[in-house]
Length: 145
Image (cartoon, rainbow, N blue to C red; front, side, top):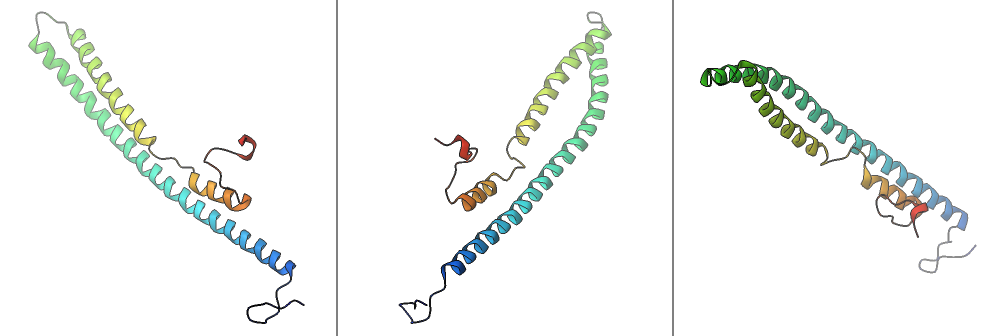
């Protein structure tokens, strides 16, 4: 049995060293998967909160918009009574509200694009730990040159 040169203790056999490496890699992968679960749960909470706020706000805005649209149509008809029929007033108010609603919907869409529920960093780290070679995000082994 070979001896360790530094302190004279017997060196561990190669099989024990390999077993330790395999166990360490397995533990590292398990830790990364636990981290991925926590990261996904955090992103799902963010998505849930954003969706709830959008839904509640959307319903309140819808009710308010309907009432405001009627009021604005009657106000416009009153202001331009001899020149503009009631249906024209409703049409003008509807077009303005459609433009504003489209802008607000686009703002909500872009807010959802600021984060992703997929834990990209964790997936890349697990791939690096398993293969031992760092990979850029979105590039698999089959895509490598």
